[in-house]
Amino acid sequence: MTNLTPSSLLLGKGKKRSLFAHVVEEIGTRIVRGDLKPGDPFPNEADLGREFEASRSVIREAVKSLAAKGLLESRTRTGIRVLPPMNWNLLDVSVLTWRYASMPPQQFFAELFEIRSMIEPRAAQLAATRATDEEIEIIGAAIAAMESASASGDGAIEADLAFHRAILSAAHNDLLLQMGNLIGVGLLTSYRISSEPYSVMLARHEDVYEAIRDRDAARARQTMELLLRGTQEFLDTHVPARATVGA
Image (cartoon, rainbow, N blue to C red; front, side, top):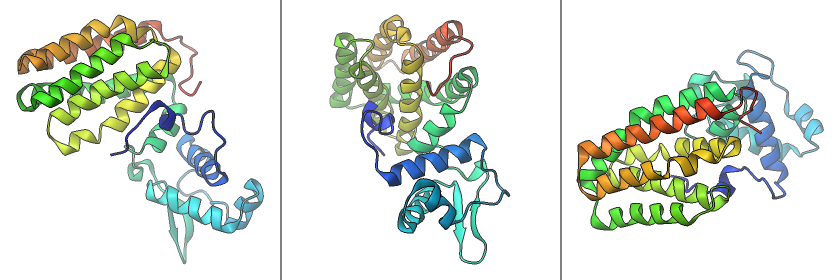
């Protein structure tokens, strides 16, 4: 699974992106936002090349990249077509970011926490019974990093993400690890809107860690449920009605 960091999640923010990355992100965003819909005529390579001032090879590689993400299909006879959302790889970090950047924040958080509440409490429960001593130390190290990090800096996001990823890993179910991208994009998005939940919910993160450390599966599940519920309630109350996820 991709090892997400704030820099990788920011999709080139603060760096000069390659033309290829720009073309992929721009076309991908248009598809996810609905500007290019399934069934609509798709621009040909020549038109895209002129628009982006890119060579045909760059356009073709961009199309291949988007096809790998499930957004496009390219066939010799039928050409390029946009695929419906059911085909999109929603665990791909780029697709996740483009999708959530186009959504109202209330919809974003409702969808995000609905999925997280199905996955993470069970993962914490499993971690309490399956984690090795070393894995529990890793979760504890993430808590220590959270305590020492500035709530408004990249270190806070990295520590918070490390905490949740360590629990998924300690559950010893490889399919759960795929949820790391979803959690990573969700954390970054919430930090862009408000970093307050980090400080407010730090104690609840500690409660989860202590339950896993104590090998108390029922308490691990309960404390993770409380952490997620409290974070969601805080964001529901404090996120400005006109905030945008992509801000």
